[in-house]
Image 1 (cartoon, rainbow, N blue to C red):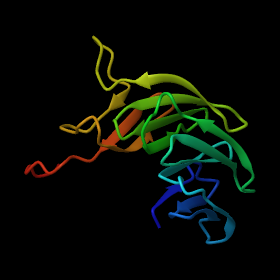
Image 2 (image 1 turned 45 degrees about the horizontal axis):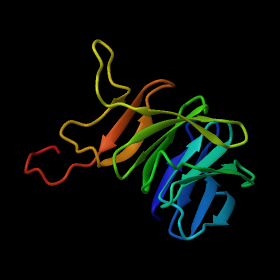
Image 3 (image 1 turned 180 degrees about the vertical axis):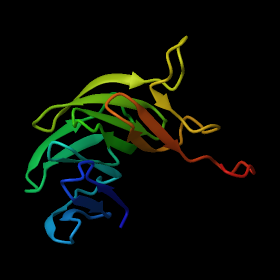
Image 4 (image 1 turned 135 degrees about the horizontal axis):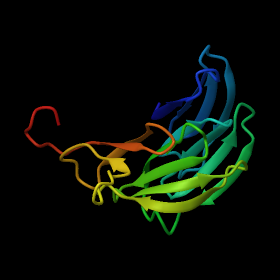
Amino acid sequence: LVGFSLSPDPDDNYVATFDAKSICLAETSGKERFTRDLPMDYAACLALGSRDRLFAVGKLPRLQAWEVPSGRVLEETDLRPHHQNTVTAIAVSPDGLRLVTSDTDGRVHLWALHRDGTAVWLAELSTNAQGDTPPLIAPQPNASRSSIDELVFLDAKRVVAVCKTESTNQPGY
């Protein structure tokens, strides 16, 4: 097991898991809904979204979408030129209309999600406050730009970037 994602909708009761070779969707009761083999460049990270969609991003910056619970492949979106490197984290907004992605360079991008599973780039999100406006991304203190490991939507408009820091000899980091 490399990673997993739980459904954001408490009524859905799905969990998705992946390893180096396959992705699996199951009900939290343990009943498997589908398993799909993955190409060699998938999966670096995945996210279950509301609106019955599962998204995975591979080492190459491509987003694959599946329908839940059938496992029908929807669309694949090339995330370049916005991501040139491995995508390290993805998250789907609670309303299922937006996706955020981060790569090994620490860049965070916002995408609009269409019902067919395609993603359309909207903006690169900033971690810097502008005047009285708080940052769109709230990074952990003392984290380097290249260390975003998880992205979490707090609500439809706010995202938190969870960052790993290098060894700092400081407790709590």
